[in-house]
Each structure stands twice: as C-alpha cells, then as structure tokens.
Image (cartoon, rainbow, N blue to C red; front, side, top):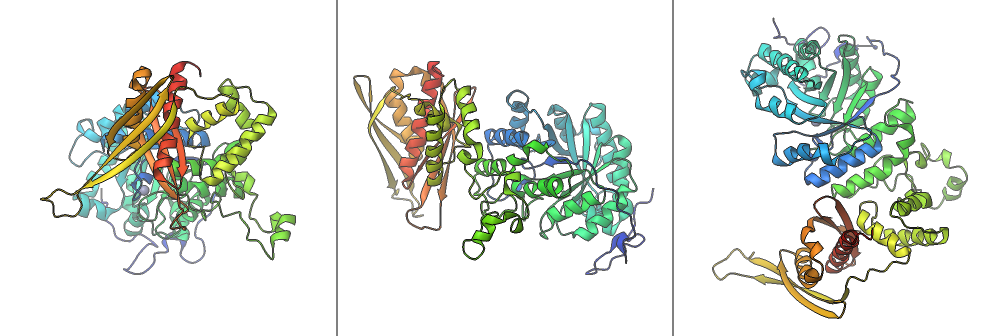
Length: 563
Ligand SMILES: [Zn+2]
C-alpha cells in the first residue's frame, strides 16, 4: 500500500498559496439536495471544557448534560474516560444519576497506540468500560502528524484506525471517527486522508467526522472537500469545526450543504482558542433558515434559556452580542426607528426572537410564565391561586432585575414559591452574624503574601434557646456554614448528612466599579440530591449568607418530610 503522496489532482499547493481543491474555477462538483435532518453532537463537556477559565466539577457536568438533553441534542459527548479522575467519575455516575430522555451519551477516546494490539490498549479498554452506547475516537488524518508527531508509518496509522474501530464494534459499541486535521491533511495528502476514512468505514464506523482542528479553513474549501468525500464513502459524514478564522458556524453550514448530516459543536461556542462551532447559532441556522430538522421543533424556544443556564453552570458571563441568544441581539436602540420597530418588527429583525426563546430581556419569570410556575407549584404540592401566582411573577421579575437568576437556583425558587403560599420557616431565627478576615504575616515570610483566615460568629434562636457559635473557614461561605451548623446542629441532627459541595461567586455589572453587585450560588447535597441556592447583594458576605441560609432551610424542609 502506498500512502505517501504530496498534492493530488487539483490539490497541489505551494507554501502560502491557497489550495482550491476540487473547486478550481467554477464548481467542479454537484451539491446534493439538503438533508431532511441533521444529528447534533454537543461536545461542551469534552472539547468545550478545554476553554481557558472553564472548569467543571462532576456535578456541573451532570447538570450541563441535563440541560443539553432538555434542549434535545442528538448526542452528548461526556468526556474522555481515563484522561482524568473527573471524567472517570462522570462516566461512573452517569448511568444512575443522569436520566436522558432525548440524547445519547458518548464517550471520547483515541485509536490504539502505534505498535500495541487493540485488546492490550488502555485507552480502548477504558472506552469499553465507560458503558455508553456510542464512542467517538480521534485519529490522525494529516500525514505529517503521523510521521512527525506520532513518528510512525502511514500504513500503521491506517491499521490503528481499522483495528480500533473493529475492536470497539466487537464490544457492541456504535463508533464515530473524528478525523483530526482532516482539511489540512486532505490539502497535503488526500489519498492518505481518504484511506483513514475508508479504514474506519470498512471496520464498521457509523459516522466519519471531518475535523477542522486548527480552525483556519474557509467555507468554500470546506464545501469542496466535503462534496468530494461524500462522493467517495457510503457512511454518514460529519463535521467538527473550530472558530479560529471566525468561520466555524459558516463552515458547518457549508458542510451540510455539501452532504454532511452530523454536526459537532458546543453550546455558546465554548472551546479552546477561538472556540468550537456555536451550536446556539448552528441549530437555528439549520432549522429555521434551511428547514432541516435538528432538535425537536417544539423545543427551539428552549435555545436561549438553555444557553443562559449553561453559561451560569460553567460560570462564564453570557455574551450579550451572541447571535440568536444574546441579551442584546433583539434589543433595538430607541430613537429614530423605535416607533417603526414597534409597528413592523419583521422589517428590523431577521426572525422573531420568540422562536428561539429570546426577548428584549430574558428572565425566568418572563420565559417561564404563569403556567410553568403553576406547574412547579403543583409539583411541590402547593395550591397557589391566580392572584398569588401573579404576585410571585412580579416578585421574580423584580429579583431577577436585581441580579437573581432562579433558573439555576432551584432550591431558592422552591422556597420563594413556598413563602408565596403563606409558609414561614420557623426552624430558627437569626439575631446576627459577623465575619472577620485576619491577615497574618509570619515573621520569617518575606513574600508579602502571608495567610488569611476567616472567622464567623453566628447568633441564632432555636425555640427558647439562644445559641452563639464561632468557627473558622477558608472563606466567608465556609466560615458562616461552619458557625451556623455549630449553632443549630444540636437541635437538627439531620444536618449531619448535608454538606456544601461547591459555591460560585460572580460580580455582576462590572461597569460600575463601586456599587457592583455580587451573586453567590451555593450547591448543597444530602448524599442523594443536589440543590442550588442563591444570594445577591452589594456585599459579598450578605450574598453568601442569603445563599447559605436558603441552603440550610431547604435541607430542613426536606428532612422534615414537609415537602
Ligand atoms: Zn475540536
């Protein structure tokens, strides 16, 4: 087998010269009719989490997956089992803790290593053990990566693909192949790039995904290359684009126009460097502009709420200018056109914002509306009449305007609804709390950094008893939590099994240097379920206390059996 080749017919390239692949002159290829449907493959939990500053706990990952399922993507790539302890734990917990109703979970890995038999390869072993119906493995399809980076022969690289797909098929896995650097590889050595795809196809891969790993390919070239590949294989072809040239979504659409029916990307375009293809734009582009089925049609209005919910979970402020889902993208500046906009919105908007669940301002109260709130209340066994629900909606709007975000704070939302129904928690009353942070500078430490310790004092009343407790922690949330538990713990032994798992602090409205508002989200678990509570204040201690107070009250309500 000869796989060494430089520049196939019509693809000869000199350094610095753009290849026009098979598109030399006019289109030298025919475009197929648009497909009826396209599989949406979300890789936020794997490729997306490579983004600088994005770090997800296992709980976060499970919650992001829930949101993706709620949106209705076809596949959710959960991570790389064996690559790190977090991803291992995710795949261990997913079968019992993640109930997917629409999406299929996928584990990611690579082909076997060079010179190692598939059955002896650790990575493939871990993929089998991840217990997902589908696995996606990455393979090198650029010859120079094989010879220069992997330092093996092209024949061995092709055998690695064939053996790995075959091994996984024999373990009853559906297999997708991510052909890494495919477009660069195709430009330099199309024969080898195609051999990699054919090897996977012959071994039983279900989808051949062409990756623009460096993200520098332009839509015209993507279209030409995809059209060529689609004509040479029988298997479904997919696309995986990075946004380094600002073309990831455009490239994904070009690929679909040329015959791809599987699109990979990330909600909100997360990913390393310039990010992956933004599914929050690719999905409505495909469905609302090209009339191709992606997520279930009746869930398109979940696009904006889910994009924002996931932004909260990954703790990255949503970009107000993000196409379709940004808070500003359907907001019109007042003035000249304001009255015309009100009269004829269709003349000033590329589509109706309601179609993607966006509006002038997105808040859970407005999004959810009365009927969803009524459902939520009924779920909790609360009978709230129309007048009370109206008041709750007004209260939600007011609070969300202040910076609360109840979509991610299910615990606090439940307490708000219970209070609206006339319930008042009477477990304990707070007299006062105080937090002091000391900065100690050891005598022999010249770094100037020293060490900070935080001490909290809480005074509460439980029935006739006044309890005062002081505790230390590594920050205000931690210290307040320890002090509050010390104070009320003797009265509420059920709190023993309850603990904080995570908290996130976000400064909102950073434009105002002073007077900025801090939002604190606290995750708490009793070992079986997890709930999130929220606090918002100009004072971080106050915000922390609100979130913590709700967390403790929520656990007492549920331990009580009152819920
Ligand atoms: Zn990628």
